[in-house]
Every structure is written in C-alpha cells, then in structure tokens.
Length: 101
Image (cartoon, rainbow, N blue to C red; front, side):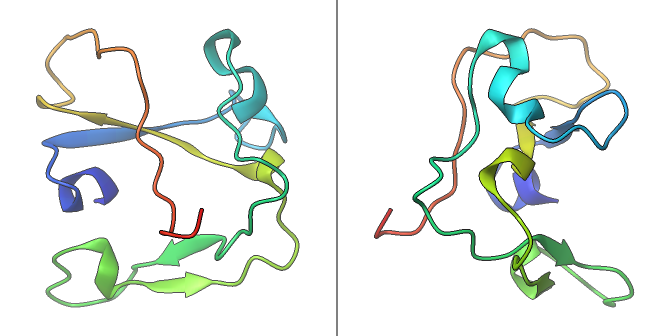
C-alpha cells in the first residue's frame, strides 16, 4: 500500500531471511540503507488492519517508536510494474523524510 499511495503499481518489503535481523538495512546488497542515527524516528509502523474503505497509508494509525533505532529500518522496493511480472528495478531508492531532514 505504501508504494501504491506514492503512485507506483506495486511494491515489496525487503527483510532479513529470519525477519528479525537487526541491521539488515546496513548491509542490503552491499550498501547501507539505514537512516542516519542522529535523525529522529517518528513511528515504528502503520496500523491499517480493520479500516473499512482504506485508500492509502494516510488513513492508517501509527505505532510509537520509543524502542527503535535506525538499525531496525525497513527497506521497501516500489515497482513501476506489477510485482508478478519479472523485471530488474533501476538502481536507487526512495526515502520518505520530513522537510526538516
């Protein structure tokens, strides 16, 4: 839903094989995609379950981020085609941040 809200056709979450590995974002495909430690973490995740007629992520609630660090950052790959079609996405990432960094 994150990618669709941003105008992409589909998307998928890139996660560690065991879904629990802290710091996965620091070594994904040999690069560090974690946010800088000095930057604030505004929330831990979206709560979108059981919301009738949900159209985008802005209608979801948010969980607090008291116990998070940027080593817990999630990587989301947005696609310009349907995820079921085989494709090689272009290099680069999309990072959503506030206007103040």
